[in-house]
Length: 420
Ligand code: HAM
Image (cartoon, rainbow, N blue to C red; front, side):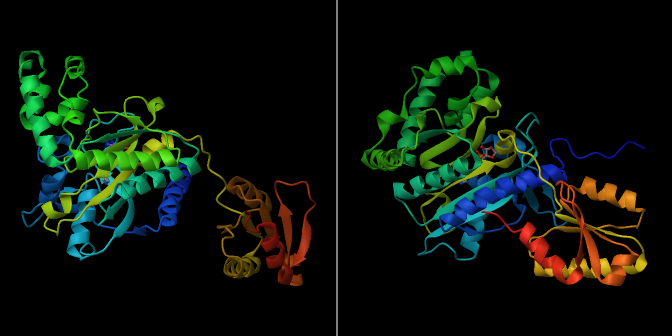
């Protein structure tokens, strides 16, 4: 029988790695909470129509990358390829949006049937924020400042790339100009780009093909078509970023792979990662709430790829255990189990691992050492009789000592007192 393996592009996260990933997640959760954002959770599966109507029928995500299936009732469902659509659906469904400002964050797994490679998975985790009911550039700036704080705490400094896509009218004019311009060169285009020209010409801007890159030099620019409102919004955002000393690069070719954006779009890019260098991205999506059946509501957000962020860090896992309990006999084991429960109760945060399945003193001590614990508590017949334990610090030169059970909690609490 062939060996069962995880699905291609979907990876297990083993304990050491899970610990590091948890630390990264906590940095982002703390950053979002520090700005007064609240958690929201929404399902992994939604009706396919939700993603078609939000991300866009002609985007790569919807055209080629969704895990779509019929459930037993014949309804078309899809695994969520991103979080904005589900978040907006949930916010509309539960009345979170009308007449209210909302600041939300989420964390979870997303699915895209892309060709797996470094930094590109079929199941990946995102941390995201979405805000509703605020139309000014100050909320765009706020989410970027939130991002900045997270990067700082992780010791990373990805490049912030910024652009504005203007409003839908301005974009429609631009789109027409782009189609006219590229149509003149249609015979030079590759099949994929020719298809994009028909279905979603803006996507030509991030085409990798050399001919498009060259043609773009002379292509019509949205910047020349922006009206007063779009300009003022973008300038307002840049002023706040400048006031906070946040560096960014302007890139008029940044269009993003999802159709719901207006005005501000941005990405955080870490070039050292190679081809898949975007650590995260987002922008404003002022039409989406209405498009999905809610009352017209301005909105902005971003999402980060946690696997890619992990790739940028040189983090190591630390021990999972503070104290390991060794017992030599049945009565001793029962007493130690009770002691372990008492210590966990009295010293929240202390991580105690109880030896299982007996074993000689030597083999139990070997397990204690392997666990990474700093302290071992040992109980033999003599200690049980005296209501004491032997306390030994494994990674210090200190002699072992015999401690009365009544006093052990105080000693451990002092030794493992949380620092900072
Ligand atoms: P996105 O740019 O499609 O935006 O994804 C955000 C981030 O998720 C990417 O920059 C990348 O780090 C990570 N990511 C995407 N696909 C993969 C993959 N196949 N493997 C590994 N990581 C991946 C969105 O998803 C929007 N919902 C962001 C947003 C929120 N816009 C407004 N609000």
